[in-house]
Structures are given as structure tokens and as C-alpha cells.
Amino acid sequence: MKVRLQIHKGGIAIYEGFYTVSDAESFGKACADAWTQLREMHMARATSVGALYEALDEQLLDKLLGAEISFSKA
Image (tube, one colour):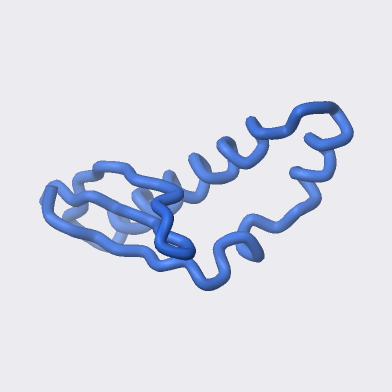
């Protein structure tokens, strides 16, 4: 099934992606891809080498606390 995965935090969409999910493995891959994309976006915002090292040290899970993850048919 084609689905849209969305992650919102504080009412603001911080991620949206489209995936084909048919079983536990494809569901896990969709979630893993969203994690990777969010991490890359977080690191891309670094404006200096020092900021990049700081971004690498920060835990993405801490940033996602309180976020809402939803799936809907695409």
C-alpha cells in the first residue's frame, strides 16, 4: 500500500515522505528512512564546523520527543 508518513512537532510538519508499506520490514524501512532524512536535515543546518560537531553530538530522539507520527493512504 502506498502511504504518506508525516512527522509533526508543535503543529509544524517537520517531515513528509511517501513509501510503499506491505509488511513489518517495509514499515521499518520507511521509519528508518525518515530518521535518516531528519538527521541529514538537522546536520545540514549547521553553519560552521563547530555547529556541525554540536549537531553530531545532539541526540535526534531528544529533538523528536513530543512529535506525532502519522501514516495515511497516499
